[in-house]
Image 1 (cartoon, helix red, strand yellow):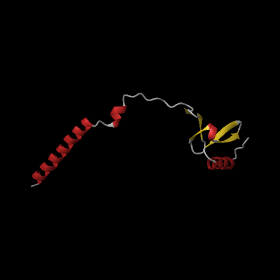
Image 2 (cartoon, rainbow, N blue to C red):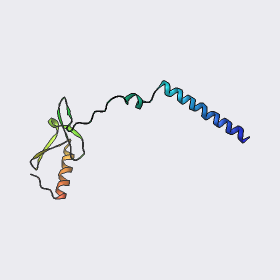
Image 3 (cartoon, rainbow, N blue to C red):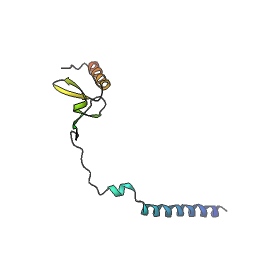
Image 4 (cartoon, helix red, strand yellow):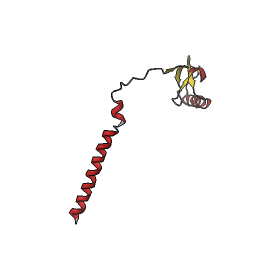
Length: 101
């Protein structure tokens, strides 16, 4: 009785394995299709058709420099995606004791 049940389990697993092989032949995984494409390393400063993108130091979002919220700090311009990120960054700088130029 146990051998008969074990036989049916092994048989079902074998049938599922064969079905999986057939499906993988018909529909190859996406990783195999894109493996031949070369990977381009990211550039240091992302650019797009609308201009250069700047990284928000508070949340890490890239924003276009033309439509961002700017702040002069330490002789450099810092770009933010929103006033909330700018205010959070200013609050963190004030707590750490860093001076703003």
